[in-house]
Structures are given as structure tokens and as C-alpha cells.
Length: 234
Image (cartoon, rainbow, N blue to C red; front, top):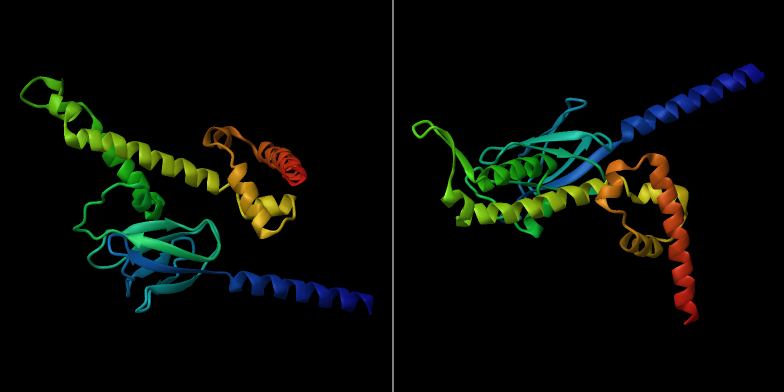
């Protein structure tokens, strides 16, 4: 009797885990980066599972998947792109028209995908270089126009914006709500205040182990509670 009961429980647990696995999905909306127009008929492929879907007339899509999956996106008239899925909820993905030139600012940069961000950093670095190659003047030479020109100055400014965005994303992907709440239960408003006031630096995140980050969160929350208590007394 006990043996049958144990077998039944094992089967139910297995069935439950399969159901949860099959039930995982990624939801999102695809937009034009420049106009914020929702894009229909975008071909979306989960690169881990090879499953494919298309966006509907309102740019919406749902595809089986999970956190840390990569989605490729392709539609006529737009640069092909790849999006990394690192957060739950509805993912807003912006594609670049293949005839557009991106004007780098904080708003635009916050919308582009990781792969596009990497490409824009590489492009900006190349445009900012003061050295150019000449096949007729003896190889490498300094180009004053590239060093002091408007395009070079804009490129150097763009590099700062782009690299800062990349650093912020790297912090966001480890200093997550799920990690914090797994260590310290708290209400949503308290969580927002804590994350805003005690966000770790990129330099710390770069070298921190999981144990380091856990210790940082616990120590920071103790300071957060202490400061909150002192504020209430005043």
C-alpha cells in the first residue's frame, strides 16, 4: 500500500514538473525604434528550442521559452536582431529600420537590444579613432579631421552613453528582485526604495562572487533598515 502511494506521488511530482516546464513562455511586443510603431509579422525564433512564431497585427507575440533564452527577430525592412530575455513580464523589443541611422541618446540606447548595443559600441569606437590606414601614404597616419571632426566628437560622446548602458544592464541582471526577495522578504514599495538607494556599482558586480553579492545585500539591507528607523524617529 505504501509502495503504491509512493509511486503515485512520484508520478504526480513528475507530471507537475513537466507541466510547469511546458507552461513556460515568453511574451513581448515588437516596435520600430524610431517611431514606436508596433510591428506585425516579425519572425521570432527561440535559438535554444528552434521554435518560431510571428507577431500579430499589434506587434504582440508569445513563444515557449524561459529566462536567459535568446530570440532572433527578422522582418523585411529592418535589421535582423537578437534579444536576450533576462526579466519576467512583457518584453518590449525595438528593431531598427535598415534605412535608419541611430541618433545616440539615453532614451534610444535604453531601448536597443544587447546585440545592437555591442554593434553601436564597436561603430562608435571605430568612428572615434584618430588613426587611419593609407595604402598610398605609408600605412598608418594621424588624421586631424578624424581626431577633431564633428563625427569623431559625437562618436566619443556616444561611447560614454553606450558603455554606461551596458554597465547598467550588467548590474540589473544580477541585482534582481528575485535574488533580493529570496534573501529578505519585503513589500514592493520597500523593495523599490532599497534597490534605488543601495544599487551596487558595476566595478563591484564585475568581480563579486555569488557569496559576495549575498553579503552585500544583507549588509545593505541592515543599513537601509537602520536609516529608515532613524528617519521615523526624527
